[in-house]
Image (cartoon, rainbow, N blue to C red; front, top):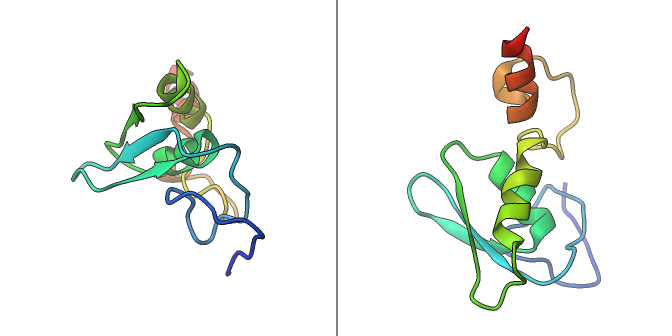
Length: 104
């Protein structure tokens, strides 16, 4: 799927994710190998949820608390949430869903 928008999207927006940016880039999301992208809070959270061992850092001019908001939001987002389909495997569920499964 190719996303067409009137405005350019942040570098953290996955090409298959159809959602628009919510604000300017305010965080850097890094994967386990230190490759990263700057993103708005919305796409930062969505891409962080899709990474194993990912980390998030606020950009120097970010509003206070941006990185922690992204971190907290990513906990409830399923990896690659822009793909449809049944999700039952642990790798397909959010971190919060996996914690809830293990508490029972």
